[in-house]
Image (cartoon, rainbow, N blue to C red; front, side):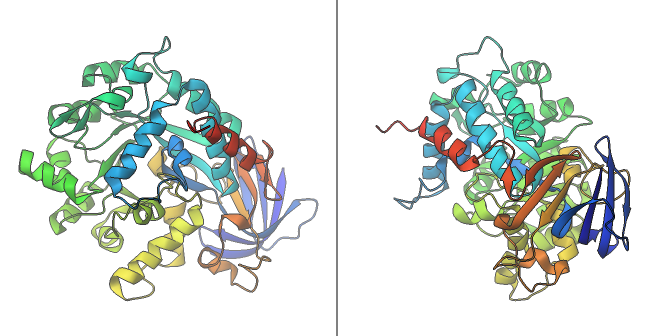
Length: 428
């Protein structure tokens, strides 16, 4: 199959009149300066497929439902627990399929699902212990996106609080039981929920289970987490993870919002990736993380939609620079190439062969229109400063068309979302 784009963002920089040849899910050639010939034309500017490195699919049911009483991250969490309590494998499949389809419409070709909703109400085990993970796998397949399922160890409600109530849906009881279930399931990566949810003695076990595969962890999202960790262990969460062997180039730390200077140095020395989720971090009033300081220390950056407050990875990329501008009072803290690299960091999902428009790479691409009211007149090389998810026209995943003309192959995704969320609403 051949595709032609008048503009594309290639590894060497912006290019024009580019022909992409795809065979068996990979680019076999990417050649600029060509005539379209019989190739299928793509509108606007073509980018590599986006990597949504951090997702909680079931949080999508909370969008637009948590702003009535203000509150904090912790009051938001109570509403999240209420949604979790109402899900089963069938309703989870319906909600996740719609959420992943929405991501595809936004140019996402691969998603890292931070999965901790393992069991039934009250902690009751399903006959198939990984029924909820299997639902996510099926949802991604039907939505046409590639899934890295990060089976998450979540054993306690806090540093001083055992798992209780709805958290029993998240907990396997102890780390050995978690490992036995997770290793028998569909996971392609693993996660430590946080240092408040995984006891210190279990951290190294999770890291050992993950050896050779992606290991993700929520890190220093809230000052309260840091304070509790310091009080219990005399260490910051970053220092604790380092001591317990959970930081390596295969590690992705999510948020990393409230770090000390020493933490930044430690993360850089470990060669990890940090996943920023700007729209969630501002929705929950978490704060602005030290993105530029992390990059300067040697950390690679990636992006995620996290709670799904917004599903727009272009906005996440743009916010990386805009939040830095607000924090520093300077423009140009990140270049357009920096933003594109963070937007397409598939290596954080265990797929370093994806995320670039080059021969041999996985054939993922996104065509962003340059003729909408948002993008008309922009320099194609600066498309990430003007476009939104609404400007996505075409999406290929593994060489297969998932979105064309701005429409998903599943049909009206808004209808699917409405039906899946309405089924979870306890109100009449």
